[in-house]
Image 1 (cartoon, rainbow, N blue to C red):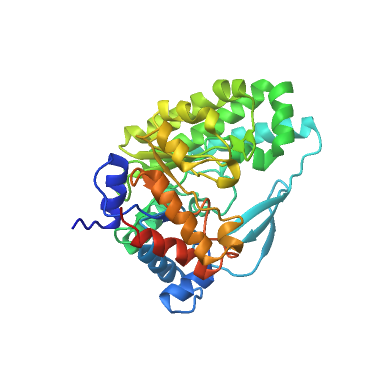
Image 2 (tube, rainbow, N blue to C red):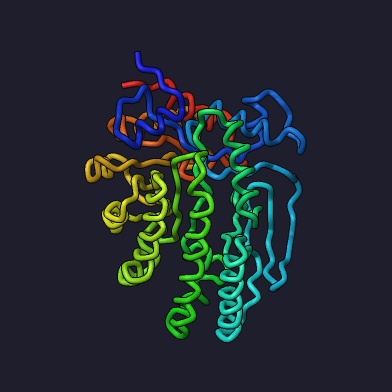
Length: 370
């Protein structure tokens, strides 16, 4: 009987080879879950080891999880007047210090200069990060990031950790400036908008070049803000003109280093799935039921592309019953056809998800075989 470890299971999934079961892919941002499955109390001294233990014992692949190095909520303000509300597992910009197009223009020009100045120095730029408490946001030095990634990857053993996530521009731009000011800049100050978008892209290409030659993982993820539950956020003409050329550069750069590439975009994205596949993405996710991203429909349309992240964490995992979650997981496995699929939540096991609900999903996925 075939028996694979996590790395083999992930590689076989991307290559379309035989599997013993579908792999589990998720993020664990839930202290109760970690303490339940490890049997130990999490504190600042053991957090990294316990998080890694919980991940490797439950997941085949993990995405940019955070180590809890503080437990209180924090309110911060940066040099430009942006304010942030931060918890160990997430972060939000709560105040954008821009009240006019002129202020948006001045800040954007300042960001462009800072981004290219940082790249020239061989460093990452704080203002070019998405500011969501991703793993890589805490490192401005590429060597320190790679070293920390390698340390955690070693603790995860054969569980695959996705490379530091690449965000080519729109997530970062819309979180930092809001959709309102990005839209105004696009129509009224297009030259500066375009230079800013290119600066964010060049920063991400620089990040790929810094990490790409390492051998800690061979799976990468690129995230872009393209859709919401009802459809595309942007006009398709804007996506084809502005987004796709930049997205393709990132996909190609990862491919040049030999990585499998997952393209991540929340929402209802049927209209652009074929375009993303044509650009070279090996996988598309998440498949949110609330956005009508149906696994069976995708499998019928795109049998050779990996799909994943389909168990709703907004309502089902957070408020549903374990038996309902088992049914949803079983259906997702069966709808997938038993191949080219990564089982997991639509985003993460966040603090509001009961431990028994997360375990119901994982245990069903591990025990189910065709």
